[in-house]
Amino acid sequence: MNNKHRLVLASIVLATEIFRFATKLVVLLGMIYNYCWPHASNLGIKIRA
Image (cartoon, rainbow, N blue to C red):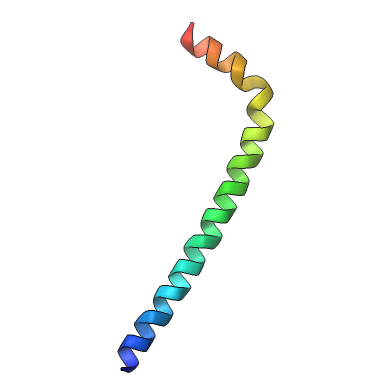
C-alpha cells in the first residue's frame, strides 16, 4: 500500500515537472518564432533556391 502511494506521488511529481518543462519549451519556441518570423520567409526562399 505504501509503495503504491509513493509510486503515484512520484508519477504526479514527474508529470508536473514534464508539464512545466514543456510549458517553458513552448514559450521559448514561441519567442524564437516571433523573433525569427520576419526573416523566416527570406530564409525559406534561400534554402529552396
